[in-house]
Image (cartoon, rainbow, N blue to C red; front, side):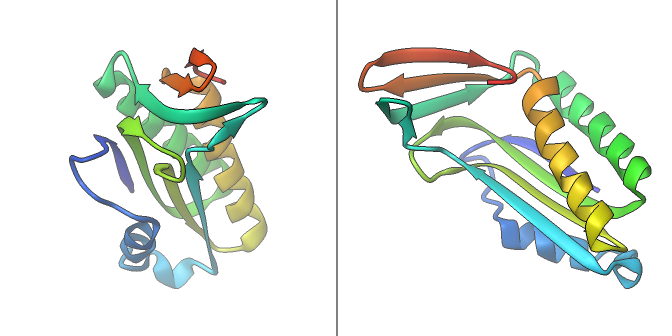
Length: 145
């Protein structure tokens, strides 16, 4: 399992890197599906234009550990073979990737369900803060926003 919460410029990892990591897993022979997700910065919110976004977490180590726990739980619940996740921190602009996930499983249905749960639990259960700078001011969005 690959789990990283890193600063945007610390290391460049893309979705293809996560897929390649999974395909090198000893469990790839037991897998019949790989699903991926790339969360990016949206440039519009309601009636405002997003100029930039700063994503942070108050305790990097705790957040990364909590993410690992979520992934272990999801892996067991859905009998997933392999998971690779990268969540970036730092300053971002429209279209920049923030959150990358790749999940491999034996069958498409449980693999897709596992991916959905990882996305939702990461958004709602982990302590991230988004400072969203728009043409109408700054919004601070805590976990779940």
